[in-house]
Length: 246
Ligand code: IPE
Ligand code: IPE
Ligand code: MG
Image (cartoon, rainbow, N blue to C red):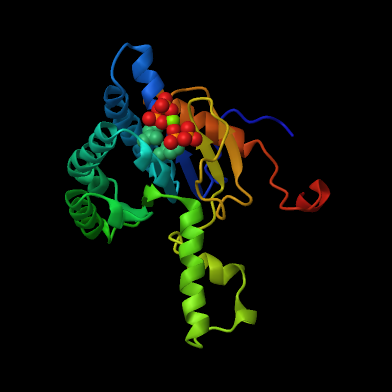
């Protein structure tokens, strides 16, 4: 297969999910506090969101805060929550201009009340937008998501709304936070770590992975483009043979 070096807009991933990692190390390299890395990470968020919308990506999901991140020092958690609120306020006009709808996944009831209010407001104000769905994973853990789906399904079985024999992949998928999103096509993780950290375990079953050494605050449109080009140069076989695909 010839290696393409530009993006083919006919073959875009429908759903890109990004593990935005490396803010702390970026700040440390500069002799600054971790909060400085998180602040600068918001610029990468804005650039990535706009670039994806411009390209025609239908779904972008950003891992912003994991269930495990609650175990960080309180000061850092507080900083991240404040940044979430200020970014939401600041980015609302950009989301509107770009016709982007905000969505969240995760146990958002755990977030501070002002963050929950701000999220509800931005979701409400962008709910008619159709160009791209931007999903923020907040207080998100994939194992917790799967357990919560199993609880809901079990309740339905108990109440005779569902038969055990009818539980299939679609049924489970419909009970996940991501029920209205397609499966992930491309996962990007920055900062050189090559792990999933409890992100979208079910939804990435057939995703392509792209790991880059770039730290999240340095991630720019050209890095996104490189990831998409790498994705487009792969053959997704879904269990079939190469000959069957062609
Ligand atoms: C990603 O950067 C942001 C969050 C997890 C909230 P980190 O804060 O994990 O940065 P490193 O991995 O310590 O460099
Ligand atoms: C994963 O990054 C979570 C987010 C990017 C929000 P972490 O930095 O928390 O991941 P681990 O703990 O190093 O795997
Ligand atoms: Mg990290």
